[in-house]
Length: 263
Image (cartoon, rainbow, N blue to C red):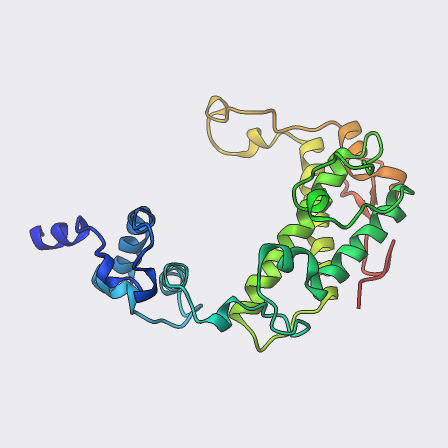
């Protein structure tokens, strides 16, 4: 027990880092120490082995977590910093490239802009990093009055799915990622969010949580039908409210409507 306790409290030694990290700030390594130790426990290896231990990702949850920490601590080869999408010609996987300038991302953003125009009858937003990634609206384009909530949700859904597609392409390079796949996941995630929001209209989820109601603090987990209408049902292009609260919302957003998936 004493030996195990001593091993758990041992500081990460810089000697176990990559030789290229000699001039780096090792405070970062200390911040990662709890995660490394937890992974070592689940993998059955000493903490020093985390720097060289190799497991196949996805083999089991513990191994997958250890592999992720291992990959994030170790800086890979120069090839690992390239965009994994087949459409790219060995471009560096910078944040701007992954989210905007990659051909896959560009096709998704153009589809998003066309969808926004079809839903709102508003000019398409400028496809710039300041607006799409940072939501900097000091430029001439602004979402129309009452559409800020819809803008934020759709924009963040696209960003989330672009990053998910990038991570998936890195871990599964044998499975090519198409813009249509990403756009379809955006639609699916939006439809799930619409259904979840509609549940807040028909009932108070606190009454079905199975715990004392005063345990559930924070904002009110309810939504009015008018708030749902304002958030998702603009011109009833994406969805519309049902006649009864007990019925699910009517989904109109599909792979073909209002804008076909990108190719």
